[in-house]
Length: 99
Image (cartoon, rainbow, N blue to C red):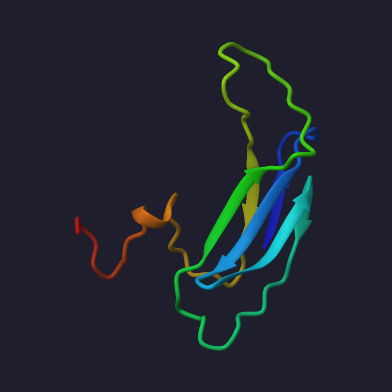
């Protein structure tokens, strides 16, 4: 797993979590981690939690100034290509459609 903030002033707090625990955190502008899958957790739904780290220098460019914008480049290797923006929006590709 690799992650890098696109803006050099940003620091990311990026957690990699199995269904029952957080296995790794990258707290930096960029980083890379190799994750060993614990026994019994392969084939389960994992999640990635990107967040703006407290070390980020908050810079506002345009109005409105309401949200910190964090743009990332994320690289995953050895992970099935089933990604969803939130836990609730995940779907089973073998059974697409509303549930």
